[in-house]
Amino acid sequence: MGVLVAFSVTPLGVGDSVGDLVAEAVRVVRASGLPNRTDAMFTTIEGEWDEVMAVVKQAVDAVAAHAPRVSVSLKADVRPGVTGALDAKVEHIERALRE
Image (cartoon, rainbow, N blue to C red; front, side, top):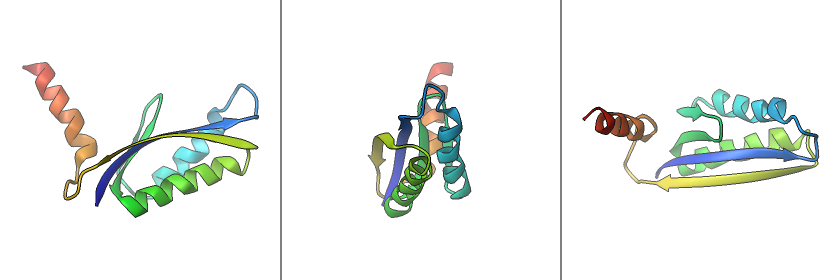
């Protein structure tokens, strides 16, 4: 089952600067080999449900190893049989903007 998952991991109880710990989560995602994109608010991963959710768990675990508490926000788009949605959705919007 194809899925896009956008998630955000926020370490709590570690002070005001959390960027280095968030980078650890992104490092896990990039090492997974799954198509992904990171922006200022979320990291989005594309793949099969079980493999994507396993990467999200690993990313959370990487942050939790250094923070007493972790907040996770997650949004999923489940579309069986669809691949390449990570880029296709953005390309569709860009085409509409050019018209």
